[in-house]
Image (cartoon, rainbow, N blue to C red; front, top):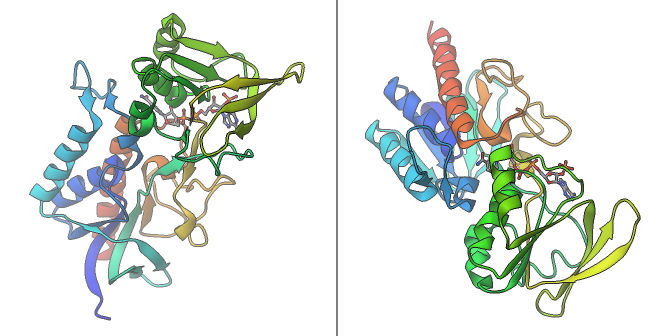
Length: 309
Ligand code: NAP
């Protein structure tokens, strides 16, 4: 198979990878972005973003991604829908095999993001798409005027609860502790929302139903009391799993699979960088994913400058 040569390959077309593409293109680096599914990634699980600077009143995530994609194409960076299946990094040139091509590149940025984590209880897999969901924006409309539940205490769970409260008759927010992790501004909105009822100190231990979700089995973590809660849907928002399986035997990752990097976002392999939600960092926002993408592209440029000497 003929190898196609690039100076930089970017894995992933979420906010981080697209921003790397934008900066690399503007720096005149011959680059391509490889994306296994659709541009945008998990940011599209959210309807709109209110905290992206410059967009007072918020911006639809779809519009934001469409705009960045246009900026990337304007600087002549290609975006291809291909899945990376194998990477070889044993020389200065890295070989990237996808489901239908083979590429050779001097540098690589891994920006493959993350996917929602599952709880791992009985009934979760069996009732997926029959009431169990990981995305209120995608599936919430199916449960208009119904009884819904959300699990988690982070930004995403609370945002999902607020989104659902505009559609459903009732939203139970089930959290395993008595304090939320989400930012205060979202907490205040949730606590003021009359349709949302918070159930603290509680875990879901089973999801029950025949052909569709009928009830959740809940356990109070303080007194171990078991209760059932009738509902039509449960939205699980308990954190993220990085999309790093395809590189976890090549680059160093932490115990949860997030890629470890230095301050320039370079991994343990020279010329291989990581940015955004797949990288081990403390703050996962669209704005930080974009910023990390810009920094990774700048680091790749510095690497390519030394490579050429
Ligand atoms: P997160 O911040 O990691 O929070 C996960 C939540 O789920 C925590 O409250 C955690 O409980 C709970 N949890 C974890 N495992 C659980 C389990 N097995 N059973 C029950 N509960 C469990 O995850 P996230 O909310 O999905 O957000 C991911 C990242 O995206 C975060 O960095 C977040 O800030 C960011 N984000 C930002 C925005 C925004 O700024 N607009 C929106 C969405 C997401 P404990 O608190 O007890 O650990």
